Image (cartoon, rainbow, N blue to C red; front, side, top):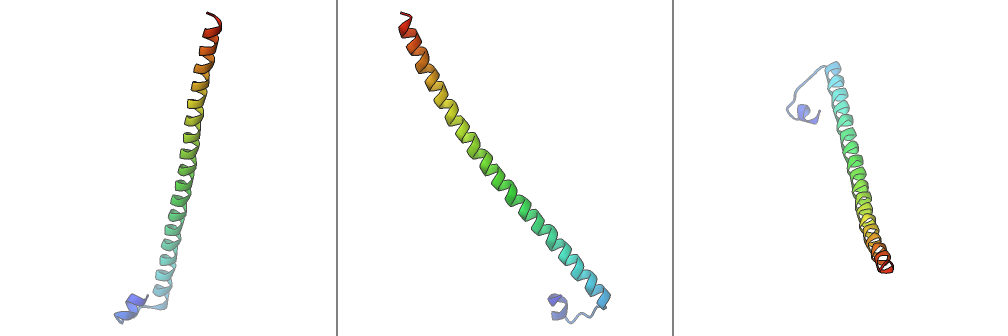
Length: 77
């Protein structure tokens, strides 16, 4: 509205109310999109951390399995 006033544009009150309502609606949509994006980023970060932890656990289990297999092989000789 400040832009219109700056250029001395006169509009009816009903039109002004519609513009304000529309601007508020667009602002709400924008804020909702920002919140959704932030939530998605947080979820993705958490999943990436979970994946990294599982990869490390898998590596450790493989190493343990190899050690166990070597021990079994040494007993059977």
